[in-house]
Length: 307
Image (tube, rainbow, N blue to C red; front, top):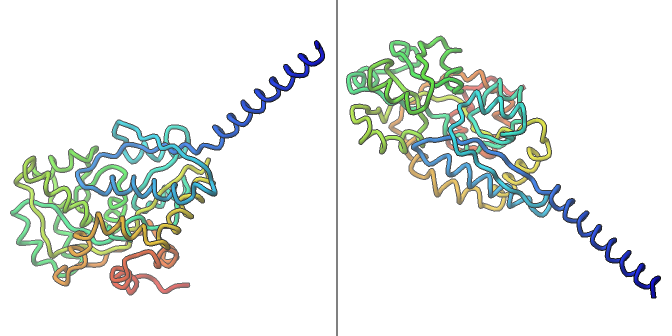
């Protein structure tokens, strides 16, 4: 009888240990995705979050369950990069292409908004509209000063092309500075401009924008992943490409950006090419299948020949 009880207790103990081990393994298999808080008036941040979930859902069978943890306080670009380098508080964020970020984190080679940010419009004050209307080449933009946030990819583009750049520390402050006439132009993508103009009507009513004059560059937006988690970068790339192949990516994109695409690619827009030294010609061809075809056709003739 004692031997029987001992055997039963041993079986129960082993079963409990096996259950605990299985639970630990399941917990360790959970992918924790830590995303910084980015506050914008446009809807592209909401879109990016949904796209992140879509990519993770598409790869759950292969890579296992996941949990996304969103920070609740604003994180500036330089702090996002620092977080990626450490890989603890932040392991995934998104940004337009930045050479410095490519050296510090893993760039997932898939353009999140189909390169739509490559057409750059300008918020300004009414007094500058006549001058903007007469712009006929890139050199005509040199008469203006350009507002930029610290760590913005477009700041590098403008500085590398010898434009006058006036910096602000925070996103919301850029509009305050523009309204106070601290600089002349604030560069924005079509989807940013259309979203932000609704806010500006009530908060900064003196700010306006030109609908026909723009700069054109190659400016893709990517997920960046901490290089401490290369498997997560692989997972996101597979998930995004799977969603593109299934049509789910296009469905989500069109839900958010249909109006912005029509605005950016309107025949009435005069877009003047500016080089982006954050990216290479090779990067363009790497992601060309996922860009808006009409936009890719505008960009490609301006790039260096494919090597």
